[in-house]
Amino acid sequence: MPNNLEERIRQLLADNDIPEQYHALIQAIILILAEHPDDSLKGACRMYAEQNGTSGKIVYQTIRRAVNRSWEESSQPASPLYTRRMSPEEFVQFAVDLLHEAE
Image 1 (cartoon, rainbow, N blue to C red):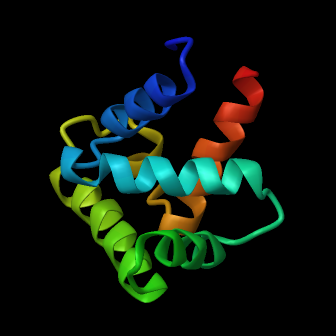
Image 2 (image 1 turned 45 degrees about the vertical axis):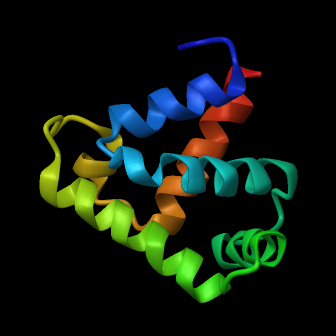
């Protein structure tokens, strides 16, 4: 796995067939949760929304759409997201846990 934190996240997203158009948003959410491990995905979405002048609900729905698209369009059926049919919450927590393990 790459050394740089952002590169590791991008690689994880690519390995799990998350469409590239969602990478920046999901990366930001993963980093928020890595800094605030006791918070939830919806809490991280609210934090992101406040920082970026949007709605936490819209941010959450966008992440949900990204995860659902990766299930539908997976070219890598062995990816953890696909094989475990992770929810958005499970996938983001999986990513945060991987980042902590790599430290």
